[in-house]
Amino acid sequence: MDRRSAMKQLAILTGGAVLMPACDFSEESILQAYQNLNITQSNKVLLSQVTNTIFPGTTLKKAEDLMIQDFVLVMSNDCLSTEQQAGFVKGLKGWEDFSKKTFGKAFSKMDQKEAEEAIMKGMALEGENESEAGHTRQFLNTTKRFALQGYLNSEYFMTEIKPYELVPARFYGSKLIENA
Image (cartoon, rainbow, N blue to C red; front, top):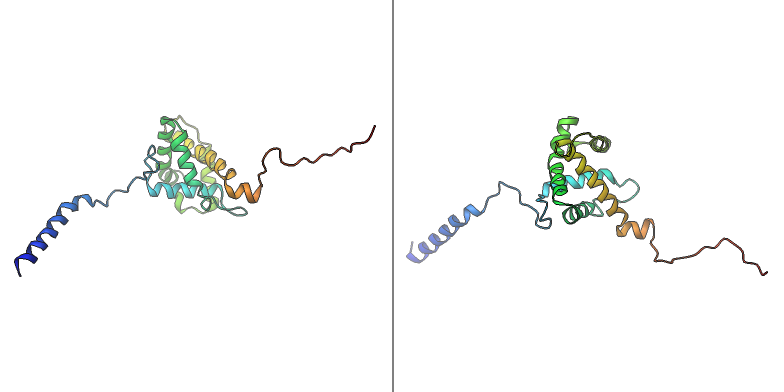
């Protein structure tokens, strides 16, 4: 082996050893688009499942097709106060464990009917805002509110379901005007 190739291999080995601590794959990265929420990709997938339960897509489009989960996250990031954001995130991160503990099954493993019942029972929970039940209720109510707002303001809904016309739109008079 000549000296030049030995030095080259030593440089590559040293560079790899220096970069190795930066390659930590044990923790899931936080999505940067929602800087106030600290949401991971798995949290976003869970939120997508919750919004798909609210809008399942039986007669209309699914919430996932309209990217309602992104709308919910943007609205939560931009429009909620710091305390409300903290409650929303705690409810989102604890929803899977809460459903497993309360209903005996993880939310991601439930079928449509079970998921609907879980959301209905979760929204009807009683408890203080600082408890697990309070965070769960806040998460579900916020998700429902913003999902409904996003769905009703989506391009799909405004063009295909209920076509929007600018004011003053049409006038359909019902009285016959007679000469006096």
